[in-house]
Length: 320
Length: 286
Image (cartoon, rainbow over all chains, first blue to last red):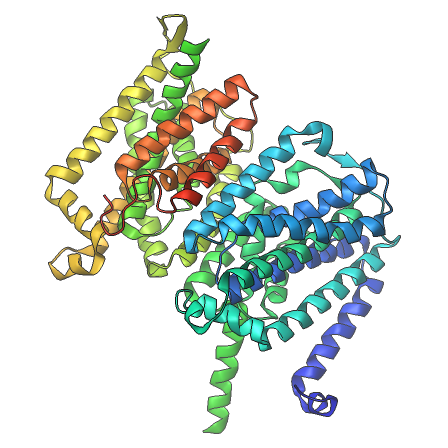
């Protein structure tokens, strides 16, 4: 591990600090609409960062990230609206509930691999979405639950809260990827049948990773819907489960920073164009779809992959 | 009541069979899940609608023209996008999601998000016991059986069908003995897509056509072929029967919204016990 003086010598540290200061100052000068877009984007990024650990490091294409986002959010909503807890207590509850549900879901689904895992988790999303729609007395169904209390008053503070969560997850992901745990996940991704021969209990690591990332997603869901103060089953359809995967893949799977770039492109760019013209808002999903197809077919490493190959190319030219 | 429920279940099964056969055929040959299946299911219904309403083509010829158009559409999808994925299922899943976004968006912007109803010429009601069935539904059952027989014949007795079976068993071996693997993939994908759109065309007069009608149908299609064993044609038919009956019985006797959910739970339970599905075998798949 590098000391502080090591970090000070690196160029990337300064770029990172500059970006951080920019992100902290930005909301103070932006309109309410822009702030809203940024908060939506931040919550999408958190969900994708959690999925990135499961997809990018462990190699399991999960299509039920949105379920955990929803479980966290509904824990928040039900605990505050129906049970009368304070929002901060509910925020503590939501990762616990999502962790348990994530762990229970991991037991059956992680026995499956590759596309079977993807499709089983897709069906799981279908089941959860049907449960949300069909229990109107508890979940409010399509009409939804209103009046979820806000964690903090101002939108700007909400934005900082999400940035803080992103930073925490980013640091944890980097530490995780350099630790023994990260090596095990990569071993599972590269050859799951071989890994147990080195004495790795793959099942335990897989389940724990899945449950922990689910819990973090649950926190993001709780924060976002506390900001929104309103939740309904319309947010959690089968189709909506693809967004997190799109963000993670476009950014670059298996890299800590990837989902942040992915969020900027997949969630941010279409919103930015929406203000420009009527047509852009009509064709927004198609834009996302085209970006997704082009990125996955031309550069499976995502945006980070493109960066890396460009900088690699420039370095080579510099050496000549 | 029970006669009516069984009749409904048979009709639902017939639609699922048409669609799931396409899905399992594509999986058997290309070894990728086709996530554009649902979008092409909807696309078929909307192309059919516009042929009837905009160009005044009668119902039955419009079916054939729309099927041919989606056959071409499927060929384009395979040639331009899915072949580039190099057979990796994860790349195919993500490319499929992206293409679904585009296709559903195109449908929404061209035809609008409101449900469209297609008038079927088969409106006669037939009484069977205490239940009744419309002649449109009888046509669906006949078409479904005809497609199954034709597909079986194609795979069993034609040279091209033999090539399809060879590729589904072992892609590399097949190319070694002179089968053009790319052509087989292209045609199979096009046939599969055409079957999806035929399913959509027959479902639309019953349920009305909406841009997102394919989403649930596609997930159900995957549940069916996973249940039956991916790549197995017989498994797809049995899976469609099981899930069709579970869906309709739960919908009729419990509550409208739970049918799909119970069918998915049923599938999840089956794959936990037998991950390769009811009829899935390693190696031999069609």
